[in-house]
Length: 172
Image: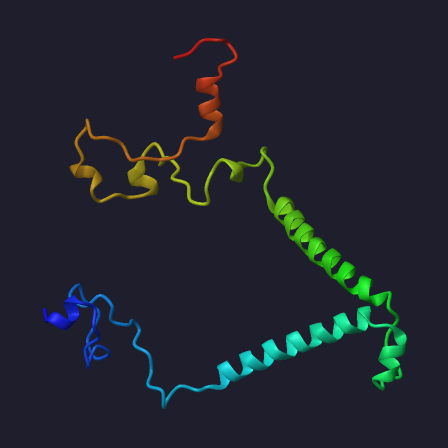
């Protein structure tokens, strides 16, 4: 490794080198050249920022300046001053109502505790029939040992409840 790279100095062709453990500071993905990049996003971003601040300053001036000063500036018609409070209040209520609506829709879409999909997933492994060769032929079954571990599957919740919470009080 060169002495310039050890001290963190940029080499002349650092943009051409791929990212590697030797040069982990190489850019990924590489930036396009300045000639091929458009400056439109930067321009539009600046215009949006400037217009936003200009509108905010005009809003604040309209809200706090006396009527005589606004008329002196040459403005002959402007909205009633009560809108200076109503617009932010309605905006806050609209945002809160949006949050409440999404929260309500999420609760409405949640299944109740009595539905099967609450405690079972969308993919269930149900036990095979008594004779698997009849319903689901398994080509490997004839090579299986008799003491082999059976295939894993989900137990029905009724069976689990009968085993765990038997009404007779006996546990097995």
